[in-house]
Image (cartoon, rainbow, N blue to C red; front, side, top):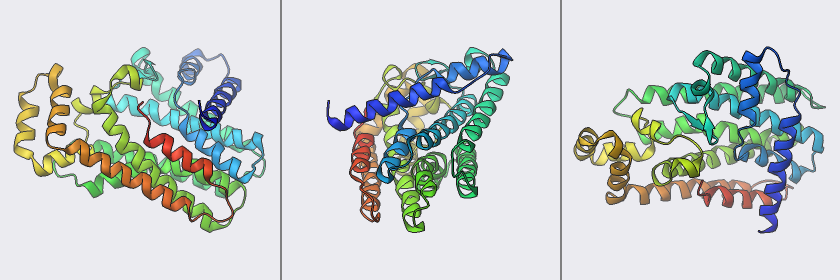
Length: 319
């Protein structure tokens, strides 16, 4: 294991330990049992790890940095719980989703509770100010807008690549951007660096999401630790689906219409591979990872070596 891999494992372990230490009451069990269940489910913790790496570049106070990273991870979990309800997913982090284990009402309340806990954790940092609060709340609204666009696209047949990229910038890129921006805001760094971190996160988020879309076609649920078929059956407009409809609409529609449900994922994979859509999509993901690296080179007075390695980690992941 490389030194950087050891660092990532250490940070992830510290985040997990700190999540367990968040004081969550036992009652009412209707609210807090599902919250505890969600937070013990694990996850890659990539967003709070990014927060730590940016903080390390600034030598940020470790306690404040952990609080910021926990707030980012809690916000992420809040969005996942609601996303799972809307997408009817049954598996998340290798365990049943909350709405599947309990019910929809329980899951909605648990998500709301986790979001509130995220706000309380963020408010606990020293030097907490309006700029941090503004960034956190703006990204929450961005995620909601991205989710709304994602749902709207399910009923549209003319979604363009530009619309898709705007959607994933909001739904995925905004939180990754906030994970990088908030340590910069906390350290009261020059506005140029903070905005560069925003652009870095948005580019990284686009590359991450497009790469994730690829993995949902080429990987399996056990490796990914989440439901994969739901996006297909719910009519999600990934960049690959958009390309299939744009360039091969007749054959695409015929394949989807004539495929058995049990064969649909396999048939879609074969279709994307034969039409070279997988290869083209890989190039698009690579272009956004490349853009994120270019942004890092523009940062002033910051050692970004670990951030470059983090980009490599996301680009080369297989889960």
